[in-house]
Amino acid sequence: MLNRRHLRVKVLQSLYAYHQSNSGDIKQHEKNLLQSIDKVYEMYIWMLSLISEVTNYAETDAEERANKHLPTAEDLNANVKILGNRFVLSLLKNKEYLAGLKKYKVAWDFEPELVKSLFIILKNADEYKEYLAKTGDTIQTDKDIIKFIFKKVILKSSISEQVFEDMFLYWPVDKDVLQALIAKTFKNFAYDDFEQNKLAEVTGNWEEDREFIVELFEQSIRHNNDYQQLITSKTQNWEPDRIAMMDTLLMKMAIAEFANFNSIPVKVTINEYLEISKEFSTPKSNSFINGILDKILADLKAQNKINKIGRGLIE
Image (cartoon, rainbow, N blue to C red):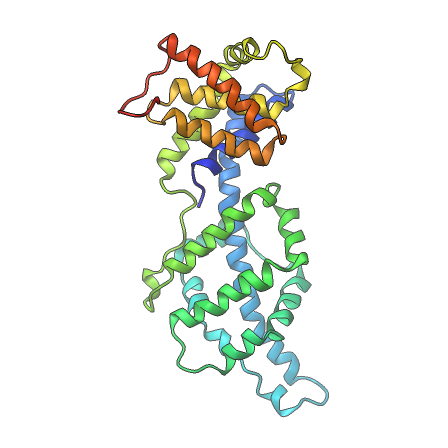
């Protein structure tokens, strides 16, 4: 699921888009921010659907084999055991999943060869042959083959990788979150009673997380000029155009957290943005941001502008 670091990245992406655009419509960019979270859930539903489509292709494959000009005995008696896979059957009866299919208009008709190509890879895998030969299956063994399909067939396929990258702008960034959501789903689907199996939630507490990202986004924009002055005062020996835009945005977000989020420890804030800088900025950004934020934090403390609630939240 999306944790606070992922959510900060979403805000960073939205702030970057805001400052790069010619539009000063904060509400529209805020709407786009929330939609970017929903896109992660949409990606999750599409992936679950693809898993289901791959398993269901066993029926099509069996029909094609049976209709060969000269079918073998094996062709006429193709093993379609996977059609009774408990994970997939539970998924197909899950109200949240069915609602997601309808909401996002999920259908793989536009990529007719994708599902077929993935099933062929599955059919030729030793793991699938072992699954077909196994008896006494449980919900756990049924999940094991689905995990194999997800991790070793779909995620390893360059075709499916390209399809998802074309469909979802932030696929390279959100891919890890998707894997976490699918992993959570495997954990949740532990019951033979399908009614007890629940989809993963996109965040731990959406009500609180929504408030967090909207407030962080708005505060970073509302006080943009003030935060820029703080940064400029500590980077007088640096030419402005030599400071990466991502570094500036990350520091502004950190300052926004220092000043406006009284339950987030300053050390947590600093560590989070240093980690994000490793992935989204330059190799030297980590030490640069750390040094500037330390200086700004010292000034804000001296001016009593850091108001944290609880012991240990400042130091």
